[in-house]
Length: 224
Length: 412
Image 1 (cartoon, one colour):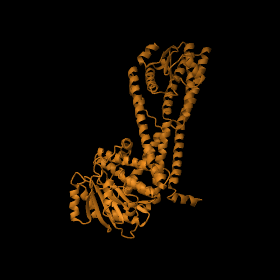
Image 2 (cartoon, each protein chain N blue to C red):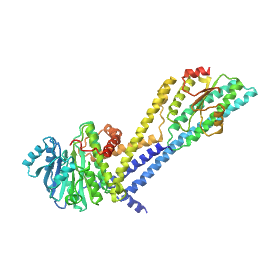
Image 3 (tube, chains in turn green, red):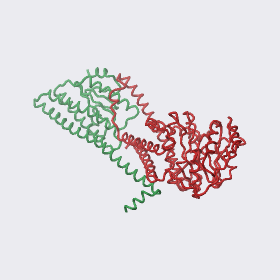
């Protein structure tokens, strides 16, 4: 058997087949390595998600305890910290997602984060109401599934504007980016409740909807 | 998975396959790569040199042939195709001084090298007939190294290695890399009976077979490719002798180079068109040579289309992004733009590029004994990253000319 294989690799006639076998082998190893490499990134996002999930649970418990005369300030700060953390993780997720080529596992992570952010939005509304907090909730509903030629650059500018707004306003603003076109009933309900008809749309404090590109100054005016 | 990454992976697979094919062929045959068969008899040989407007080089070419150490070289027929310069005068003056040189002139300009070659071939009576371009210079021992391959009766054509003559400028050095790599891989293809061209700078044919298959096709822009495919079609062997070197003058300007490559490609398209019905038939012609040409053509065009699509998409993205950024008074460039996250395909691309670089350096190293000037890494990088990527653009021009039927040798 060994001799047969050796003979096959020595023969000129079989060189096309030999090259094909080797190419398939090398290619398969490459694809597996690529898959493993992308899985590492997904695993990193996953571990961040688990931590965020715990933090949200913590923030939720805090907000639930407000009625039991616990300190509002702690709940507000916890919520804001969580918002900042989730916002940073969204950027990392976005970078990794743009660099994903072989596997699509990261999409699931994206959906999980969107749902997490939806919970966070509800929690933020609750804290704001119960504690009469002064922070503003800015939800950025963007298109995730099918971005056309116009949407992609528009959303990139929306992101930049919101990033600037967040940098300027700091803890005064809770920024929650959320995919508006994914097939989950909670997200669909939010979209329906706030009458979001086009994406991207910025929703400020549940009342103001911004669908066109605006400057940071314009958004600041709308917040105030 | 999206379509584009899938296409990139398909390209990568083909590149890996072709690289492995050549690597395996080299590993199997490296010990005999430069072997020369022992000459069993002296075959009578005549060389034919087609010439058009080559007054500066033709004398040197004839001298290179006269210097040949092969005893069987009887005549050198130099065919002037009604040049507009003094080529014919130069040829005649040499012919007067040396009775082995015969000066010929076509009755009227034939418009192609094949015309002059066929015209000269009419006068040849020897067992073998060889051809050398008027701007090519075979080494003293090139012909004698080639002739031994004719001991095998099935061999119809034997070619030598073509290398760039004295490359001085940067552009000439890039072509020198290309010529060396082509010579190396052409010999490797020889081992699987897949030589697809018996090029003009130096090829010797068995004359009776050359006549039997009908000489060169004068309608084809690359008569050497067409004749090789015809020989393959008829089941004749083509051999290459990599130690038989011919140095050829390479184009010094981009325009000359572009025109030369367009002519080669148009000839390739003509040949594909002529033999298209033999796809996957007729031995190696249909099994490898024809698919190899067609797949290269397809991949080149697809690659170029993807390139234009990506450039257009990037441009539209950039334009809209700039428009919206101006409307929003936000910076067009932020630190985030420099925060690049590499994809798996980026790593694959780098690995493949390194494989290509190693392959090229190795090929140059193998052929270095043949006066290849030292090539630095910068030349090799430009060769891989710029020079080779120009080919799809040449292909577009060639296809346009081929479709319109507006091709000619240009200078004639």
